[in-house]
Image (cartoon, rainbow, N blue to C red):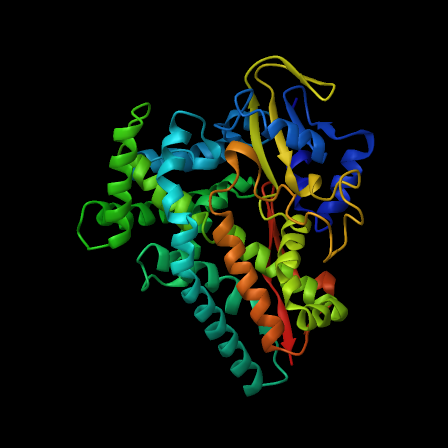
Length: 419
């Protein structure tokens, strides 16, 4: 049956109130006979730890006919087929053998040694952006600074572009390309917007295709192709083609490397702006900044939900699933499960085991970029509480602008006063 209210309800500002309402009767909410939302931590965790039973290589297209006007996505895909390429699934939405190969290709670029080399650039970029914000505030003390456009958006973009040897790529262009990937599958666009996204994605593909074809020297692309060749020699179960490499560059690096980190930075800054005591505590005890980062990730999971498809009839924690069922693991709900976390809706800086949330998934599909995201978040929040004495929101909390859809929510405008 069609459920026209299903996607609409995820546009609410009170997303966590929605989760509590859906979970009143338990950790599993059935949208229809085939699609189920997993809301509880224990059930989510048990499912992600069984990746061969609950498959990740699933897109919304497989169930959208029950919940959405599929013609919108059909138009998007048709445009890509006729003008460029339909990209493959990301690493996080793939299964072996493809997942194994792609993951092995990505791993070296997020290794501890690689991030140690990148850390000075991250710190310098944080200081530069905060300095620009500070000067802007001093120029006109009556005008608030939009934290999103001046910090949480440019920081992850500049960092991922540094990693990819693309220092001159404009921030706005990267954001435009990223949005062209994320927006259609947030299930909140109309046909015209979907086609606009398709045209933009073709532009991104043309740019990276030129890099792959060697029209411009790029150390990162050269290294990526060498790593890909080596991995395939060692693991011949899946052979990459040009579309795979485009997918890795555009989705696994460029888009995944900035979208969710921007959301977490903005969400964390809003928490600081709303709680003067929290800001003061972190200023006095900067060693707690990593714990704050983990609480931000838990409270405001940048990826609110990920799909799984049931490969065989099974039972998990007393819940029965049938082959072919679709599950949406709502990490945003699981990370506030009162059966797993004390004071689940509050920042608890001295929480035991602060990193044991599901913001980055778990098991085989733990986010490969999680160490880079943590590096950026810790550097940003640490420098913010060192640089400023306080910050406050320049509007009512209910006036903070959000972009919300089925897959996530992010703050699009966050006006702040700093002192």
